[in-house]
Image (cartoon, rainbow, N blue to C red; front, side):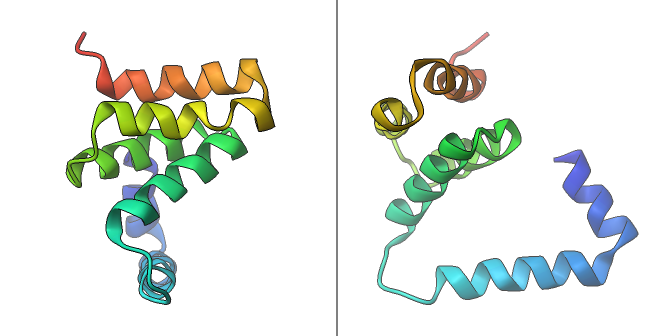
Length: 100
């Protein structure tokens, strides 16, 4: 994303530290890549972060996670975050899953 690229340009030390933190938390336990990717998508959905939902959907697709698995991950948020928030997140996922 452009904003993250700008962070790298303007604050390379901060960007590297952020990436290093991400690597550390990913390697800190037994969860596999697929599970971590779906959890990150779920967290982004619950937090209502459109950019993060886009980012984690892209990462899930790179891991060959299916469209149905991605959509179910978002749908699981429905009882907790409500219909409007879930539908917003589903639309963000569909920005990447639905061929225009």
